[in-house]
Amino acid sequence: MTRIDLRNPTVLRFTARRLGQALGTASCQAGERLRRAPLAQRSAAMVERALALPPVARIRRVAQPLWALVPADQRRAIAVDLVCAAPLIGPAVALALVADRRQRRDALLQRLAHSHALTRWIFLRCLGGVYLCAFASLWPQLPGLIGQRGILPAAELLEAVRQTTGRERYWQLPTLFWWRADDRTLRGVCAVGIGAAVLLIGDILPGPMLLLLWLCYLSFVTVSQEFLSYQWDALLLESGFLAIFFAPWRWRPGLSRAPLPPRLLVWLYRWLLFRLMFSSGYVKLASGDPTWHARTALAYHYETQPLPTPPAWYLHQLPAWYHRWETGVALALELIVPCGALGPRAARLSTALLTTVLMAAIQLTGNYGFFNLLTAVLCLPLLDDAWLVALLPRRWRVWVGAAALRALPARWSDWRALPVALLILGLSGFYLRLMIFARRDLPWPSRLRALASRLPLARAAPLVQRLRRVPVALLPWHLVNTYGLFAVMTTSRPEIIVQGSRDGTNWLDYRFRYKPGDLRRPPRWNAPHQPRLDWQMWFAALRGPWGPAWFTRFMLRLLEGSPEVLRLLEANPFPDAPPRYVRALWYDYRFSDRALRRETGAWWRRELIGLYFPPVALPERAAQQQPPGR
Image (cartoon, rainbow, N blue to C red):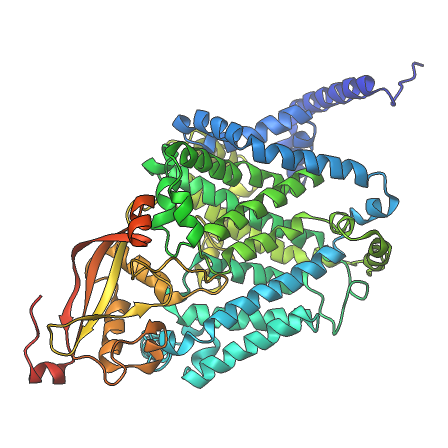
């Protein structure tokens, strides 16, 4: 009998290839018999046939549908983008491979490569910091935004819904404010959120604190309408919901007094980061926006984004070839790099490094609230304890590593997390299907439909139809969300200048805290704080004259002299009494060039477009004097 030397790599590859061919041939011959087999046997056989494929064939089968997602006219451009991003991707991959090889020589780090106790501990502290930033940012803005004398009072919304719906309103609008929605209650719930975030950072009852934080923030998102409708608000809710099951439910769990986190939830966080980043890149190409296709989007982005920072002015002055290069790099980092989140250890580390670098660059040039911070925190589940312990000084490695290894074994934790995983994967698969299958020019959705008709579940059509209603019913709870920032790049920057007057002739400007107004005032830093009114003014300017319904309410509050709304502004030009009239002008703002700024000191230049909101007055004041002309 011939012996096979299993230590020879050539023999191993040959044996694996022949074994795969043999299993594949056997499974094909048994295909006819499996059609008559029971459901469980047919499903298991399909999995076995997939596993029997050689590794190259498996990669090809996965890569082909992903590559088909890219528009045909953009495939060559994506390859060029990958080459442009090589100076960033190459060192990150090399660093990850070298670090992975070094860790294999350390016995302690080898054992920690399968542990996530330290990863979870750091992740939950960082998530508590993000929650703290979110609630602390809301605290001074709540009365002016959704208070009783705010722009969109939460009490009015809930009362209108209460009068038109039945008990289903508690499911359709999940919020703690059904009992009361006055200013004191709003501030009280916000204070509870701040306190729970502090306790979470202090590792006190992390599980209950995360549940409380999620309920409080969901309550604000539900009643704040446009003011809390941003993608990072939904991302915080989705991340916080997973953290409820990811965190230990003990008094002071620490590193060694809590069960190990379920691996299913670790992979769900990786899946979340992949969806966030990949969807952000996919929608840019799928939208057909010419600036993304021509790789000129970032030539407009720095001056047209909602709230730029001072470095954005300097980057906007760079030549066109640089903007084309960085646009290609951004697309490569959003479309190709996220795939590493679902790969081996070295790929996950390089993905975490590159995503963090991208978030730091975005934070440097724009104010996006806590979005960049939260995305960087979501990179932590890509790492295991070995990566984190290796960053510590040598005198701390043994102590921290030993504490992480003393974590209690997780009995049945993955099984307890299975219902959550099935729910998240089902909802996210539904949303990805809507995003991808919306494009009719893709060759593979029809193949997937044909393949789905052969699956064992194809006969369960009534059950499938019922399951399709689940994502719609769960939309108000923000368990799973869709993502994709700047799918269509704005190439101009309209701005609204709100003015008031006592006589209809002399008009004074209302100054906002962060949005552009005064031409000489430089852009300001405000992240992780998010001025919700300043952000909505950017969206209102893009909608054109008269704007959304909330803008009319905002002008009404200025006529009334609401102190809660006026606190959202930087300066009130009418401190003694509110103005008789208010109006809004529509301008086109642009960054100044180097010569203009050197001569005048102006960061911006502007041109009047026209009247955005006509002069209006309260009825009792209009009766005293006719409204002024334009």
